[in-house]
Image (cartoon, rainbow, N blue to C red):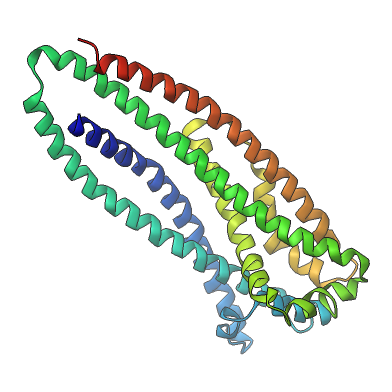
Length: 303
């Protein structure tokens, strides 16, 4: 029984490799794109004698503060884009490294699995071959469903993390409704949080917001690829695009700054609905998995 249990555990881990490789592929595609964009922007900025390294460690909140108070005169769109791309590429690179480590570990599990399968083959009686063939077939099916559930869980977790950050930002921005537009980024929100212990926490959340949006979109792509539930995540993609295409102008123009509140609120509600939809798919897969496991048990203990 211990041998069968370990083989089942290894099979689940090995089956996970397909999803991890798909995630790595999606991450690398984004990372390569960001690398090229950074290279292109760095070249154009350096032609203007602007040192790009100063943006790499600079707080995004301070950058937005300068952008808002100067109406774009102190921070150009090009400089803002470089900072956005740099922060996102650093976070995605960390995820790429983690995925590669997980896949490398699975290669070790594959060797153990093959060794134990050979051992199992020597222990199975001829009269039990058909029984174990059925069990093996059902174990593969079980591993598939477990992996799909993990993919859905990853997407749900990504969506929940994104919504926690969106809710945090939304609460901050909602408080600013009593202020005038200058107060939001001037003597109000930004100046206040930079002088309190909230600053570091807020900075980290805002810095991660673009990454979490990108991650949620990538996790949804994996779910769509393997399960084909046809989840429409175009709104999440648009949110990711918003950071590059519109956010700069919304911050630079006092008349447009409150657009951000509506955009964050809309994104929060959309993400919340998608998480509910994913949870529904998860419940269906869990029911199927329980059914498979019950059949396995009946076969295993049959005479």
